[in-house]
Image (tube, rainbow, N blue to C red; front, side):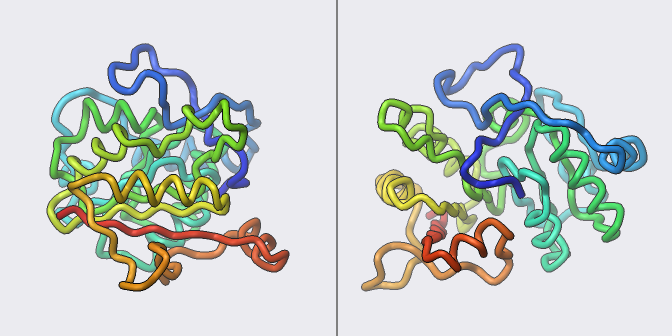
Length: 242
């Protein structure tokens, strides 16, 4: 996973028809290493999906029917590979456009023999709008999205009301949305935005501050572990579709 204080990048779409002012990426350059390039060549044909507006057939894409979890912005893929390995019963549809990150996850897929990951190298907003039907997802993961620290940039944050409503409508009843951030002001905004969405219900225990303990399946990244040792906080939120 990339440094959570940096944006998750991707190449720009040719057309954005939903939430034009908020995208699931920010452009950033990056070099594809030899190992990543080999992984893309070797494993890409099997694990990379083509963005194609229309009905998405998860059973055909994964070769089986299983709960479908969407991950938005997986960075370098370390956490994604770990989660897929400890939850083999689930299918993971992962959206990221940063080529080095895509190559890195494909490398991990090959090394660990993971069968339950498929990657879309495309903006998750467009994937939601044009590929996935409503009530089609069992879960959504968004870990450490860009916090856009400056006040004048807060409008660029991914977690805003219209986008959260879109995510909620794509979840099946009982499906979950799991967010994590290490930036406390953004954590407060996330809690406020998710709490205002009538289709979602917080799973945090009563009398808590609204956040949940880190679920066992989400690993600590090196960056996160270093931050915790320095006294920095990390906030996890898990809401369910009513």
